[in-house]
Length: 559
Image (cartoon, rainbow, N blue to C red; front, side, top):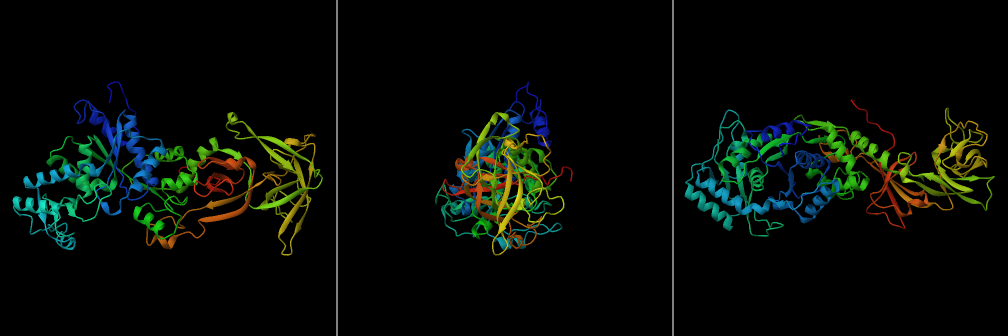
Protein backbone atom coordinates (compact mmCIF):
# COMPACT_ATOMS: atom_id res chain seq x y z
CA UNK A 1 0.00 0.00 0.00
CA UNK A 2 1.35 3.41 -0.96
CA UNK A 3 2.39 5.68 1.91
CA UNK A 4 0.02 8.32 0.54
CA UNK A 5 -2.91 5.92 0.25
CA UNK A 6 -5.45 6.15 3.03
CA UNK A 7 -8.13 3.46 2.95
CA UNK A 8 -11.44 4.21 4.61
CA UNK A 9 -12.28 1.10 6.61
CA UNK A 10 -15.59 -0.54 5.80
CA UNK A 11 -15.27 -3.54 8.14
CA UNK A 12 -13.06 -5.23 10.73
CA UNK A 13 -10.95 -6.94 8.05
CA UNK A 14 -9.82 -3.54 6.78
CA UNK A 15 -8.74 -2.63 10.31
CA UNK A 16 -6.64 -5.80 10.62
CA UNK A 17 -4.98 -5.15 7.27
CA UNK A 18 -4.24 -1.51 8.11
CA UNK A 19 -2.64 -2.67 11.34
CA UNK A 20 -0.50 -5.21 9.43
CA UNK A 21 0.55 -2.62 6.84
CA UNK A 22 1.43 0.10 9.35
CA UNK A 23 5.04 0.78 10.46
CA UNK A 24 6.29 -2.24 12.34
CA UNK A 25 3.38 -4.36 11.13
CA UNK A 26 3.81 -7.91 9.89
CA UNK A 27 3.37 -6.91 6.21
CA UNK A 28 4.82 -3.40 6.31
CA UNK A 29 5.85 -2.28 2.82
CA UNK A 30 4.17 -5.22 1.09
CA UNK A 31 1.31 -5.14 -1.40
CA UNK A 32 -2.00 -6.50 -0.08
CA UNK A 33 -2.51 -9.86 -1.76
CA UNK A 34 -5.70 -11.93 -1.34
CA UNK A 35 -7.14 -14.95 -3.11
CA UNK A 36 -10.50 -16.53 -3.93
CA UNK A 37 -10.11 -20.34 -3.68
CA UNK A 38 -13.27 -22.21 -4.80
CA UNK A 39 -13.37 -25.97 -5.04
CA UNK A 40 -14.27 -26.93 -8.67
CA UNK A 41 -16.93 -29.48 -7.68
CA UNK A 42 -20.02 -27.40 -8.41
CA UNK A 43 -21.26 -24.01 -9.52
CA UNK A 44 -20.85 -20.83 -7.49
CA UNK A 45 -23.86 -19.55 -5.55
CA UNK A 46 -24.92 -16.26 -4.00
CA UNK A 47 -22.88 -17.04 -0.87
CA UNK A 48 -19.75 -17.21 -3.01
CA UNK A 49 -20.63 -13.77 -4.38
CA UNK A 50 -20.08 -12.36 -0.92
CA UNK A 51 -16.71 -14.12 -0.66
CA UNK A 52 -15.76 -12.82 -4.12
CA UNK A 53 -16.76 -9.31 -3.06
CA UNK A 54 -14.70 -9.61 0.13
CA UNK A 55 -11.61 -11.15 -1.51
CA UNK A 56 -11.44 -9.05 -4.68
CA UNK A 57 -12.99 -5.93 -3.15
CA UNK A 58 -10.60 -5.85 -0.20
CA UNK A 59 -7.61 -6.09 -2.52
CA UNK A 60 -9.03 -3.30 -4.69
CA UNK A 61 -9.54 -0.93 -1.75
CA UNK A 62 -5.90 -1.33 -0.70
CA UNK A 63 -4.50 -1.10 -4.22
CA UNK A 64 -3.58 -4.77 -4.03
CA UNK A 65 -4.18 -7.87 -6.10
CA UNK A 66 -6.30 -11.00 -5.81
CA UNK A 67 -5.57 -14.47 -7.18
CA UNK A 68 -8.07 -17.00 -8.45
CA UNK A 69 -7.18 -20.49 -7.28
CA UNK A 70 -9.00 -23.74 -7.90
CA UNK A 71 -8.79 -25.81 -4.74
CA UNK A 72 -8.57 -29.13 -6.56
CA UNK A 73 -7.00 -31.28 -3.83
CA UNK A 74 -9.96 -33.70 -3.80
CA UNK A 75 -10.18 -35.46 -7.19
CA UNK A 76 -13.43 -37.32 -6.51
CA UNK A 77 -15.97 -34.71 -7.71
CA UNK A 78 -13.91 -32.12 -9.55
CA UNK A 79 -14.38 -31.30 -13.21
CA UNK A 80 -13.14 -28.80 -15.79
CA UNK A 81 -16.81 -27.87 -16.44
CA UNK A 82 -16.91 -26.27 -13.01
CA UNK A 83 -13.56 -24.53 -13.52
CA UNK A 84 -14.86 -22.77 -16.65
CA UNK A 85 -18.17 -21.91 -15.01
CA UNK A 86 -16.41 -20.35 -12.01
CA UNK A 87 -14.29 -18.17 -14.30
CA UNK A 88 -17.38 -17.05 -16.21
CA UNK A 89 -19.24 -16.13 -13.02
CA UNK A 90 -16.38 -14.06 -11.60
CA UNK A 91 -15.91 -12.20 -14.88
CA UNK A 92 -19.66 -11.59 -15.03
CA UNK A 93 -19.49 -9.94 -11.58
CA UNK A 94 -16.82 -7.61 -12.99
CA UNK A 95 -13.64 -8.97 -11.40
CA UNK A 96 -10.46 -10.25 -13.00
CA UNK A 97 -7.34 -12.00 -11.72
CA UNK A 98 -5.01 -11.16 -14.60
CA UNK A 99 -2.31 -13.82 -14.97
CA UNK A 100 -2.69 -14.94 -11.34
CA UNK A 101 -4.69 -18.11 -11.94
CA UNK A 102 -3.60 -21.16 -9.99
CA UNK A 103 -4.64 -24.68 -9.07
CA UNK A 104 -3.96 -26.23 -5.70
CA UNK A 105 -2.54 -29.14 -7.68
CA UNK A 106 0.18 -26.79 -9.00
CA UNK A 107 1.84 -27.30 -5.62
CA UNK A 108 1.37 -31.05 -5.11
CA UNK A 109 5.09 -31.73 -5.28
CA UNK A 110 5.95 -28.91 -2.87
CA UNK A 111 3.23 -30.09 -0.48
CA UNK A 112 4.67 -33.59 -0.59
CA UNK A 113 8.18 -32.30 0.13
CA UNK A 114 6.78 -30.23 2.99
CA UNK A 115 5.22 -33.38 4.44
CA UNK A 116 8.57 -35.18 4.25
CA UNK A 117 10.13 -32.19 6.04
CA UNK A 118 7.61 -32.55 8.86
CA UNK A 119 8.39 -36.27 9.19
CA UNK A 120 12.12 -35.54 9.33
CA UNK A 121 11.52 -32.91 12.02
CA UNK A 122 9.57 -35.43 14.09
CA UNK A 123 6.34 -33.48 13.46
CA UNK A 124 4.45 -36.07 11.38
CA UNK A 125 4.04 -39.85 11.34
CA UNK A 126 2.35 -42.56 9.30
CA UNK A 127 -0.71 -43.93 11.10
CA UNK A 128 -2.51 -47.17 10.27
CA UNK A 129 -5.72 -46.49 12.16
CA UNK A 130 -8.87 -46.60 10.07
CA UNK A 131 -11.27 -43.64 10.09
CA UNK A 132 -13.56 -45.52 12.45
CA UNK A 133 -10.69 -46.35 14.81
CA UNK A 134 -9.57 -42.72 14.82
CA UNK A 135 -13.07 -41.66 15.81
CA UNK A 136 -13.11 -44.21 18.61
CA UNK A 137 -9.70 -43.07 19.89
CA UNK A 138 -10.14 -39.30 19.50
CA UNK A 139 -11.06 -38.88 23.18
CA UNK A 140 -13.18 -36.07 24.60
CA UNK A 141 -12.59 -32.80 26.39
CA UNK A 142 -11.31 -34.63 29.49
CA UNK A 143 -9.64 -37.55 27.71
CA UNK A 144 -6.74 -37.20 25.26
CA UNK A 145 -6.79 -38.95 21.90
CA UNK A 146 -4.48 -41.90 21.36
CA UNK A 147 -2.59 -43.52 18.49
CA UNK A 148 -0.33 -46.58 18.77
CA UNK A 149 1.69 -45.25 15.81
CA UNK A 150 2.54 -41.83 17.25
CA UNK A 151 6.06 -42.84 18.29
CA UNK A 152 6.86 -44.68 15.08
CA UNK A 153 10.52 -43.96 14.15
CA UNK A 154 10.99 -41.12 11.69
CA UNK A 155 12.86 -43.36 9.23
CA UNK A 156 10.02 -45.87 9.23
CA UNK A 157 7.36 -43.19 8.69
CA UNK A 158 9.42 -41.66 5.88
CA UNK A 159 9.79 -45.03 4.17
CA UNK A 160 6.07 -45.82 4.50
CA UNK A 161 5.10 -42.36 3.26
CA UNK A 162 7.23 -42.78 0.16
CA UNK A 163 5.70 -46.20 -0.43
CA UNK A 164 2.23 -44.64 -0.02
CA UNK A 165 3.15 -42.27 -2.83
CA UNK A 166 4.44 -45.19 -4.92
CA UNK A 167 1.01 -46.83 -4.72
CA UNK A 168 1.89 -49.87 -2.62
CA UNK A 169 -1.11 -49.57 -0.31
CA UNK A 170 -4.85 -49.59 -0.89
CA UNK A 171 -7.22 -46.73 -0.02
CA UNK A 172 -7.67 -46.25 3.72
CA UNK A 173 -4.70 -48.42 4.69
CA UNK A 174 -2.59 -45.54 6.02
CA UNK A 175 -2.62 -41.80 6.58
CA UNK A 176 0.01 -39.23 7.41
CA UNK A 177 -0.79 -37.30 10.57
CA UNK A 178 0.71 -34.15 12.01
CA UNK A 179 2.24 -34.70 15.46
CA UNK A 180 0.91 -31.83 17.57
CA UNK A 181 -1.11 -32.37 20.77
CA UNK A 182 -3.44 -35.29 21.43
CA UNK A 183 -4.83 -33.54 24.51
CA UNK A 184 -5.64 -30.23 22.81
CA UNK A 185 -9.02 -28.69 23.58
CA UNK A 186 -9.20 -27.89 19.86
CA UNK A 187 -9.81 -31.25 18.22
CA UNK A 188 -8.39 -29.92 14.97
CA UNK A 189 -5.00 -30.00 16.69
CA UNK A 190 -5.23 -33.60 17.90
CA UNK A 191 -2.77 -34.93 15.34
CA UNK A 192 -4.90 -34.15 12.27
CA UNK A 193 -4.57 -36.21 9.09
CA UNK A 194 -2.64 -34.30 6.42
CA UNK A 195 -2.42 -36.99 3.68
CA UNK A 196 -4.67 -39.89 2.73
CA UNK A 197 -4.48 -42.58 0.06
CA UNK A 198 -6.93 -42.16 -2.81
CA UNK A 199 -6.41 -44.14 -6.03
CA UNK A 200 -8.64 -41.77 -8.04
CA UNK A 201 -7.50 -40.08 -11.23
CA UNK A 202 -7.20 -36.30 -10.95
CA UNK A 203 -8.69 -33.99 -13.61
CA UNK A 204 -5.28 -32.37 -14.15
CA UNK A 205 -2.60 -34.77 -12.93
CA UNK A 206 -4.26 -37.99 -14.06
CA UNK A 207 -2.88 -41.01 -12.18
CA UNK A 208 0.42 -39.41 -11.18
CA UNK A 209 -0.73 -39.17 -7.58
CA UNK A 210 -2.50 -41.71 -5.40
CA UNK A 211 -2.08 -39.71 -2.19
CA UNK A 212 -3.71 -36.33 -1.74
CA UNK A 213 -3.32 -33.62 0.91
CA UNK A 214 -6.17 -32.73 3.23
CA UNK A 215 -7.53 -29.23 2.76
CA UNK A 216 -6.37 -27.98 6.16
CA UNK A 217 -2.79 -28.79 5.15
CA UNK A 218 -3.09 -27.64 1.52
CA UNK A 219 -4.77 -24.33 2.36
CA UNK A 220 -1.89 -22.58 4.18
CA UNK A 221 0.59 -24.20 1.82
CA UNK A 222 -1.13 -22.78 -1.27
CA UNK A 223 -1.47 -19.34 0.33
CA UNK A 224 2.22 -19.26 1.23
CA UNK A 225 3.36 -20.44 -2.20
CA UNK A 226 1.32 -17.66 -3.84
CA UNK A 227 2.64 -15.04 -1.39
CA UNK A 228 -0.84 -14.25 -0.08
CA UNK A 229 -0.68 -11.65 2.68
CA UNK A 230 -4.24 -12.08 3.97
CA UNK A 231 -6.22 -15.28 3.61
CA UNK A 232 -9.87 -14.28 4.04
CA UNK A 233 -12.05 -17.26 4.99
CA UNK A 234 -15.55 -17.98 6.19
CA UNK A 235 -16.15 -18.37 9.89
CA UNK A 236 -16.13 -22.17 10.00
CA UNK A 237 -12.36 -22.02 9.49
CA UNK A 238 -11.82 -20.11 12.73
CA UNK A 239 -11.18 -23.29 14.73
CA UNK A 240 -8.83 -24.46 11.99
CA UNK A 241 -6.65 -21.35 12.18
CA UNK A 242 -4.29 -22.78 14.86
CA UNK A 243 -3.39 -25.61 12.46
CA UNK A 244 -3.07 -23.13 9.59
CA UNK A 245 -0.54 -21.16 11.66
CA UNK A 246 1.20 -24.40 12.75
CA UNK A 247 1.83 -25.38 9.12
CA UNK A 248 3.10 -21.89 8.24
CA UNK A 249 5.48 -21.97 11.23
CA UNK A 250 6.82 -25.51 10.82
CA UNK A 251 7.22 -25.98 7.06
CA UNK A 252 9.83 -24.09 5.05
CA UNK A 253 7.64 -21.74 2.98
CA UNK A 254 8.35 -18.59 0.95
CA UNK A 255 5.90 -16.39 2.89
CA UNK A 256 3.78 -16.30 6.03
CA UNK A 257 0.13 -15.43 5.28
CA UNK A 258 -2.44 -14.46 7.90
CA UNK A 259 -5.88 -16.05 8.05
CA UNK A 260 -8.86 -13.83 8.93
CA UNK A 261 -12.41 -15.20 9.19
CA UNK A 262 -15.78 -13.56 8.48
CA UNK A 263 -19.34 -14.84 8.67
CA UNK A 264 -20.67 -16.47 5.53
CA UNK A 265 -23.94 -15.37 3.95
CA UNK A 266 -27.18 -17.10 4.85
CA UNK A 267 -30.46 -16.48 3.01
CA UNK A 268 -33.89 -17.77 3.91
CA UNK A 269 -36.08 -19.96 1.67
CA UNK A 270 -33.11 -21.62 -0.01
CA UNK A 271 -30.20 -24.02 0.50
CA UNK A 272 -26.60 -23.20 -0.32
CA UNK A 273 -24.65 -26.35 0.50
CA UNK A 274 -23.14 -27.74 -2.70
CA UNK A 275 -24.13 -31.27 -1.73
CA UNK A 276 -27.78 -30.26 -1.55
CA UNK A 277 -27.62 -28.15 -4.70
CA UNK A 278 -26.03 -31.08 -6.50
CA UNK A 279 -28.83 -33.35 -5.25
CA UNK A 280 -31.47 -30.95 -6.60
CA UNK A 281 -29.81 -31.14 -10.01
CA UNK A 282 -29.05 -34.86 -10.11
CA UNK A 283 -32.49 -35.84 -8.79
CA UNK A 284 -34.27 -33.72 -11.41
CA UNK A 285 -35.89 -31.33 -8.93
CA UNK A 286 -34.68 -28.41 -11.05
CA UNK A 287 -33.64 -27.77 -14.64
CA UNK A 288 -29.88 -27.93 -14.06
CA UNK A 289 -27.44 -25.75 -12.12
CA UNK A 290 -28.70 -22.69 -14.01
CA UNK A 291 -32.37 -23.18 -13.19
CA UNK A 292 -33.65 -19.67 -12.38
CA UNK A 293 -34.94 -20.91 -9.02
CA UNK A 294 -31.44 -21.94 -7.91
CA UNK A 295 -29.26 -19.61 -5.78
CA UNK A 296 -26.36 -20.27 -8.14
CA UNK A 297 -24.88 -17.26 -9.90
CA UNK A 298 -25.63 -18.81 -13.30
CA UNK A 299 -29.23 -19.45 -12.18
CA UNK A 300 -29.62 -15.88 -10.93
CA UNK A 301 -28.09 -14.58 -14.17
CA UNK A 302 -30.54 -16.65 -16.24
CA UNK A 303 -33.39 -15.31 -14.14
CA UNK A 304 -32.34 -11.73 -14.89
CA UNK A 305 -30.25 -10.69 -11.89
CA UNK A 306 -27.55 -8.13 -12.59
CA UNK A 307 -23.97 -7.97 -11.29
CA UNK A 308 -24.70 -4.56 -9.78
CA UNK A 309 -27.66 -5.90 -7.79
CA UNK A 310 -25.67 -8.85 -6.43
CA UNK A 311 -22.65 -6.73 -5.49
CA UNK A 312 -24.90 -4.11 -3.84
CA UNK A 313 -26.55 -6.92 -1.91
CA UNK A 314 -23.14 -8.23 -0.78
CA UNK A 315 -21.89 -4.78 0.19
CA UNK A 316 -24.99 -3.71 2.07
CA UNK A 317 -25.11 -6.91 4.10
CA UNK A 318 -21.72 -5.95 5.50
CA UNK A 319 -18.84 -8.07 6.73
CA UNK A 320 -18.86 -9.25 10.33
CA UNK A 321 -18.03 -12.10 12.67
CA UNK A 322 -21.68 -12.70 13.54
CA UNK A 323 -23.54 -15.31 11.53
CA UNK A 324 -26.93 -14.11 10.28
CA UNK A 325 -29.64 -14.99 7.80
CA UNK A 326 -30.74 -12.38 5.28
CA UNK A 327 -34.22 -12.17 3.80
CA UNK A 328 -34.41 -13.26 0.17
CA UNK A 329 -36.67 -10.24 -0.22
CA UNK A 330 -33.64 -7.99 0.32
CA UNK A 331 -31.86 -9.59 -2.64
CA UNK A 332 -35.00 -8.92 -4.69
CA UNK A 333 -35.06 -5.35 -3.37
CA UNK A 334 -31.50 -4.76 -4.62
CA UNK A 335 -32.43 -6.09 -8.07
CA UNK A 336 -35.60 -4.03 -8.21
CA UNK A 337 -33.61 -0.89 -7.35
CA UNK A 338 -31.22 -1.51 -10.25
CA UNK A 339 -33.82 -2.50 -12.82
CA UNK A 340 -36.12 0.39 -11.93
CA UNK A 341 -33.38 2.72 -13.16
CA UNK A 342 -32.17 0.75 -16.17
CA UNK A 343 -34.85 -1.57 -17.54
CA UNK A 344 -36.77 -0.61 -20.68
CA UNK A 345 -40.54 -0.42 -20.26
CA UNK A 346 -42.63 -2.55 -22.62
CA UNK A 347 -46.14 -3.97 -22.72
CA UNK A 348 -47.01 -7.65 -22.37
CA UNK A 349 -50.34 -9.29 -21.65
CA UNK A 350 -49.94 -12.47 -19.62
CA UNK A 351 -53.60 -13.62 -19.53
CA UNK A 352 -54.99 -12.15 -22.76
CA UNK A 353 -58.57 -11.49 -23.63
CA UNK A 354 -59.53 -9.63 -26.81
CA UNK A 355 -61.01 -6.16 -26.61
CA UNK A 356 -62.76 -4.72 -29.69
CA UNK A 357 -63.17 -0.97 -30.00
CA UNK A 358 -66.47 -0.90 -31.86
CA UNK A 359 -66.37 2.72 -33.00
CA UNK A 360 -62.79 2.51 -34.28
CA UNK A 361 -62.64 2.12 -38.10
CA UNK A 362 -61.95 -1.48 -39.10
CA UNK A 363 -59.48 -0.58 -41.84
CA UNK A 364 -57.58 1.95 -39.72
CA UNK A 365 -54.28 1.43 -37.93
CA UNK A 366 -51.87 3.93 -36.47
CA UNK A 367 -48.69 4.23 -34.42
CA UNK A 368 -47.78 5.99 -31.22
CA UNK A 369 -44.44 6.90 -29.67
CA UNK A 370 -43.94 5.94 -26.03
CA UNK A 371 -40.96 6.43 -23.71
CA UNK A 372 -38.60 3.52 -23.11
CA UNK A 373 -37.73 4.52 -19.57
CA UNK A 374 -39.11 7.57 -17.72
CA UNK A 375 -36.02 7.51 -15.49
CA UNK A 376 -33.66 7.73 -18.47
CA UNK A 377 -34.80 10.18 -21.16
CA UNK A 378 -31.62 9.36 -23.06
CA UNK A 379 -33.06 5.89 -23.78
CA UNK A 380 -35.47 7.56 -26.19
CA UNK A 381 -38.82 6.35 -27.45
CA UNK A 382 -40.17 3.43 -29.41
CA UNK A 383 -43.03 2.98 -31.84
CA UNK A 384 -46.08 0.88 -31.00
CA UNK A 385 -48.98 0.04 -33.29
CA UNK A 386 -52.69 0.41 -32.54
CA UNK A 387 -55.79 -0.96 -34.27
CA UNK A 388 -59.43 -1.86 -33.66
CA UNK A 389 -58.62 -5.11 -31.83
CA UNK A 390 -56.23 -5.26 -28.92
CA UNK A 391 -55.29 -7.70 -26.15
CA UNK A 392 -55.84 -6.72 -22.51
CA UNK A 393 -55.41 -8.56 -19.22
CA UNK A 394 -58.30 -10.78 -18.20
CA UNK A 395 -58.04 -9.42 -14.65
CA UNK A 396 -58.70 -5.90 -15.94
CA UNK A 397 -62.33 -6.81 -16.68
CA UNK A 398 -65.23 -7.89 -14.50
CA UNK A 399 -68.83 -8.45 -15.69
CA UNK A 400 -69.98 -6.91 -12.43
CA UNK A 401 -67.62 -4.63 -10.52
CA UNK A 402 -66.37 -5.06 -7.00
CA UNK A 403 -66.12 -2.01 -4.71
CA UNK A 404 -63.29 0.32 -5.78
CA UNK A 405 -62.73 -1.61 -9.03
CA UNK A 406 -61.63 1.12 -11.46
CA UNK A 407 -60.99 -0.88 -14.57
CA UNK A 408 -63.25 -2.34 -17.27
CA UNK A 409 -66.89 -3.33 -16.76
CA UNK A 410 -70.02 -2.44 -18.72
CA UNK A 411 -70.91 1.17 -18.06
CA UNK A 412 -67.83 1.57 -15.86
CA UNK A 413 -65.38 4.47 -15.67
CA UNK A 414 -63.31 5.68 -18.58
CA UNK A 415 -59.87 4.11 -18.62
CA UNK A 416 -56.66 5.08 -20.37
CA UNK A 417 -54.90 2.72 -22.74
CA UNK A 418 -51.24 3.48 -22.10
CA UNK A 419 -49.98 5.90 -24.77
CA UNK A 420 -53.08 5.53 -26.96
CA UNK A 421 -56.69 6.54 -26.21
CA UNK A 422 -59.34 6.73 -23.55
CA UNK A 423 -61.95 3.95 -23.71
CA UNK A 424 -65.10 2.90 -21.88
CA UNK A 425 -66.40 -0.68 -21.69
CA UNK A 426 -69.77 -1.27 -23.33
CA UNK A 427 -70.24 -5.06 -23.14
CA UNK A 428 -68.78 -8.53 -23.40
CA UNK A 429 -69.27 -12.05 -24.77
CA UNK A 430 -68.85 -15.47 -23.14
CA UNK A 431 -68.55 -19.05 -24.30
CA UNK A 432 -70.83 -21.94 -23.28
CA UNK A 433 -68.95 -22.32 -19.99
CA UNK A 434 -69.32 -18.68 -19.11
CA UNK A 435 -65.71 -17.71 -19.82
CA UNK A 436 -65.13 -14.20 -21.10
CA UNK A 437 -64.14 -14.42 -24.78
CA UNK A 438 -64.47 -10.82 -25.92
CA UNK A 439 -64.83 -7.35 -24.44
CA UNK A 440 -66.31 -4.43 -26.34
CA UNK A 441 -65.58 -0.77 -25.76
CA UNK A 442 -65.77 2.63 -27.40
CA UNK A 443 -62.97 5.13 -27.63
CA UNK A 444 -62.73 8.90 -27.57
CA UNK A 445 -61.08 9.81 -30.90
CA UNK A 446 -60.06 13.17 -29.44
CA UNK A 447 -57.94 11.63 -26.66
CA UNK A 448 -54.90 10.59 -28.67
CA UNK A 449 -51.97 9.89 -26.34
CA UNK A 450 -54.36 9.31 -23.43
CA UNK A 451 -55.35 12.88 -22.69
CA UNK A 452 -58.94 14.06 -23.39
CA UNK A 453 -59.23 17.24 -25.44
CA UNK A 454 -61.71 18.79 -23.00
CA UNK A 455 -59.44 18.19 -20.00
CA UNK A 456 -62.00 16.08 -18.11
CA UNK A 457 -60.80 13.93 -15.22
CA UNK A 458 -60.41 10.21 -16.03
CA UNK A 459 -61.53 8.18 -13.05
CA UNK A 460 -60.47 4.73 -14.30
CA UNK A 461 -57.05 3.08 -14.30
CA UNK A 462 -54.34 3.24 -16.96
CA UNK A 463 -54.19 -0.15 -18.66
CA UNK A 464 -51.44 -1.86 -20.61
CA UNK A 465 -52.38 -3.56 -23.87
CA UNK A 466 -50.94 -5.07 -27.06
CA UNK A 467 -52.14 -4.55 -30.62
CA UNK A 468 -53.75 -7.80 -31.79
CA UNK A 469 -52.67 -7.17 -35.39
CA UNK A 470 -48.95 -7.17 -34.56
CA UNK A 471 -48.71 -8.99 -31.22
CA UNK A 472 -46.12 -11.73 -30.75
CA UNK A 473 -46.83 -14.95 -28.90
CA UNK A 474 -44.60 -15.69 -25.92
CA UNK A 475 -44.13 -18.20 -23.14
CA UNK A 476 -43.69 -16.54 -19.77
CA UNK A 477 -42.32 -18.27 -16.69
CA UNK A 478 -43.31 -17.01 -13.26
CA UNK A 479 -40.86 -18.04 -10.55
CA UNK A 480 -41.33 -18.19 -6.80
CA UNK A 481 -39.21 -19.52 -3.93
CA UNK A 482 -37.96 -23.05 -4.53
CA UNK A 483 -38.80 -23.93 -0.92
CA UNK A 484 -42.01 -23.18 0.96
CA UNK A 485 -40.34 -22.80 4.39
CA UNK A 486 -37.85 -20.20 5.59
CA UNK A 487 -35.25 -22.72 6.75
CA UNK A 488 -35.21 -25.80 4.48
CA UNK A 489 -31.81 -26.74 5.94
CA UNK A 490 -33.64 -28.24 8.94
CA UNK A 491 -34.67 -31.79 8.13
CA UNK A 492 -34.89 -33.25 4.63
CA UNK A 493 -34.90 -30.24 2.31
CA UNK A 494 -36.67 -32.30 -0.38
CA UNK A 495 -39.81 -32.36 1.74
CA UNK A 496 -40.02 -28.58 1.61
CA UNK A 497 -39.94 -28.12 -2.16
CA UNK A 498 -42.54 -25.63 -3.32
CA UNK A 499 -44.77 -27.26 -5.98
CA UNK A 500 -45.74 -23.77 -7.18
CA UNK A 501 -42.20 -22.46 -7.61
CA UNK A 502 -42.67 -22.39 -11.40
CA UNK A 503 -45.78 -21.40 -13.32
CA UNK A 504 -45.55 -21.55 -17.13
CA UNK A 505 -47.90 -19.28 -19.07
CA UNK A 506 -48.36 -19.96 -22.77
CA UNK A 507 -49.99 -17.88 -25.52
CA UNK A 508 -49.08 -14.64 -23.80
CA UNK A 509 -49.00 -11.56 -26.03
CA UNK A 510 -46.08 -9.12 -26.21
CA UNK A 511 -45.38 -6.04 -28.30
CA UNK A 512 -43.28 -6.35 -31.46
CA UNK A 513 -40.26 -4.55 -30.04
CA UNK A 514 -39.49 -7.75 -28.09
CA UNK A 515 -38.85 -9.72 -31.29
CA UNK A 516 -35.13 -9.05 -30.89
CA UNK A 517 -34.98 -9.46 -27.11
CA UNK A 518 -31.47 -10.54 -26.13
CA UNK A 519 -30.75 -12.99 -23.27
CA UNK A 520 -29.81 -11.12 -20.14
CA UNK A 521 -31.45 -7.87 -21.28
CA UNK A 522 -34.01 -6.77 -18.72
CA UNK A 523 -37.43 -5.26 -19.34
CA UNK A 524 -40.18 -3.97 -17.15
CA UNK A 525 -43.45 -5.48 -18.32
CA UNK A 526 -45.79 -2.68 -17.28
CA UNK A 527 -47.82 -3.56 -14.17
CA UNK A 528 -46.36 -7.09 -14.20
CA UNK A 529 -42.75 -7.04 -13.04
CA UNK A 530 -39.24 -7.28 -14.45
CA UNK A 531 -38.50 -9.94 -17.05
CA UNK A 532 -35.67 -11.12 -19.29
CA UNK A 533 -35.47 -13.41 -22.30
CA UNK A 534 -34.45 -16.92 -21.23
CA UNK A 535 -30.86 -17.65 -22.25
CA UNK A 536 -31.53 -21.35 -22.86
CA UNK A 537 -34.94 -21.71 -24.45
CA UNK A 538 -35.89 -18.39 -26.03
CA UNK A 539 -35.57 -18.25 -29.82
CA UNK A 540 -36.77 -15.95 -32.59
CA UNK A 541 -39.65 -18.33 -33.28
CA UNK A 542 -40.43 -19.15 -29.66
CA UNK A 543 -39.98 -16.26 -27.25
CA UNK A 544 -39.55 -17.24 -23.59
CA UNK A 545 -39.33 -14.70 -20.78
CA UNK A 546 -38.47 -15.27 -17.13
CA UNK A 547 -39.87 -13.08 -14.41
CA UNK A 548 -36.88 -11.79 -12.48
CA UNK A 549 -38.78 -10.04 -9.70
CA UNK A 550 -42.20 -8.57 -8.99
CA UNK A 551 -42.86 -4.84 -9.15
CA UNK A 552 -44.06 -4.67 -5.56
CA UNK A 553 -41.28 -4.49 -2.98
CA UNK A 554 -42.02 -6.73 0.02
CA UNK A 555 -38.76 -5.87 1.81
CA UNK A 556 -38.91 -3.37 4.64
CA UNK A 557 -35.65 -1.94 5.96
CA UNK A 558 -35.13 -2.55 9.65
CA UNK A 559 -37.71 -5.30 9.74
